[in-house]
Image (cartoon, rainbow, N blue to C red; front, side, top):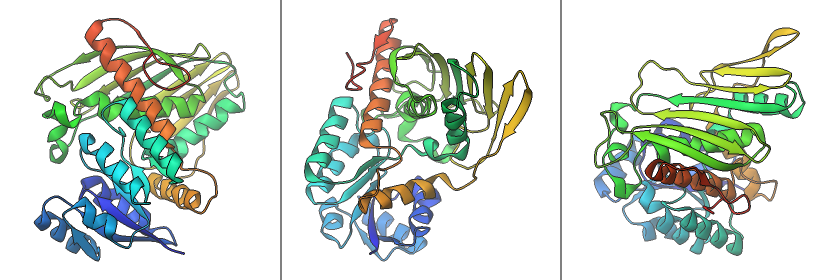
Length: 338
């Protein structure tokens, strides 16, 4: 049985990563694409070999499709996700799931009630590097985890410098764009949930409209682990990385906060240094494989809707902290602001 996909949004990420990832599945097919601009939809379909193009959500949901991938601007996710769920379509949604964690919870609850598979497209937890780190920590190779550091300040490419740096109403800014990813990756690698966050944000010259283009966050996790993260849009030469330091060793990963299966992971202990091997499978291909398996009733998406609630609640807390100058607690039960 094939899984026929409809793309909600004629996006760059779909073109660069998701269309190929869907087609890499033995049972995957991209059947239709929707853009509010009929001309854009038609051109996108033609350029990417997609059979059908439509310009309204109703038309897409009426098509012969089984699942939708939502990659529109953030303020549209809620309405589009709920409509797809109502139409009986499985949903893989870009992060953040919505503009508030309350809205995200309503989407996840609706999907659960309808028996719909709902996933968040947090790609980084599908990286072999991060799974190797998670496995090493779970196996006790660094002893008790104590602290973590995430370096995820990059340069936002010119072709993406649109709504992300200019439209607060669309959910722009680096926190909703990148801090959500760092929240999810920290949770995944540590196998732990954040309970408190303090954050500073900055507008260093790229973002307008009161939006932030840089952020630094301090996190506290349930286990007592503390972490720091740096997110940004303006650092051309920073490089990315992820470190976890424990009582018996450290994991030092470089060039791993990326959409491509690259980078390295070094384990440093009393025995010396060891470079961990990991698979180099495309992150999105792995994500789609798990999503298709979930549709068949085998397991769940690599990042669930609940994972998306957690990451959005964390980002909300970071933004609130940056405005108030105070640490903000994250509800450990609901992933919502306490």
